Image 1 (cartoon, one colour):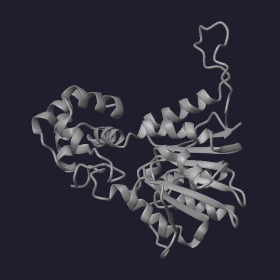
Image 2 (cartoon, rainbow, N blue to C red; image 1 turned 90 degrees about the vertical axis):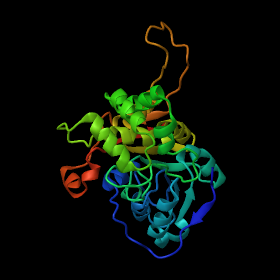
Image 3 (cartoon, one colour; image 1 turned 180 degrees about the vertical axis):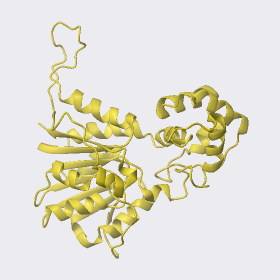
Length: 317
């Protein structure tokens, strides 16, 4: 883990990446002057810049990202805000350590934007089946295992389990058998071609390799496990009335978020057949709305990558 701060310096640069549902994020965070905010998925810094713009003088933002390339771009994006922005290269699974180390306690709002950015899709690390790049898929290059390790060395049963569980790929066994027949695979294009052959043409609007690439990315970066850990840590950091805003982009992420809010807003976690509550659970969150929010049609037209976004909000009790 790395928690060394990177102060914003250098020239302000624009980026092709478009942050999703910016106005809604600002509204639901209830950004007010002089607040203390945490962006757990800094990316290019678009949401962070909007938060600092809305909160004005006296505000402070702690930005986390495991990807050093994204952090470098955000460093330039947020340079005009000077000492108001403190950027750290670390996975959000270390959220609580980062906040305590740098005395960001308590905080008024925490943002998770769980989507892939165009920076990562174009980084030459094999995230996209539309490029011919090494099968890496690590956000943090210092991580030990890559997607190539999984594809080329995992046993058949384990690889099929990963594609089925994390990619919700119903043809996982068929894809796995063809992967084993074509090992070793070293690039994203090679893997995409094998998956395409395994599934045939089809008429789905999704590329045949979409679910396979998603599954590998989630496992390489332990995204669902890290998300569950970070959401729990966020409860210890938010002040009463502070907001937790979460943007997810596929069903597995959204399920983790939804289940977390539901569990932490309940007065009892005992099984339904238990006649008397034995858990003494105290609710810590209040769902701001039971509704899940999605991008407007106009935003989807302007930024097609936003179309699968789901936004959920909860408030610390």
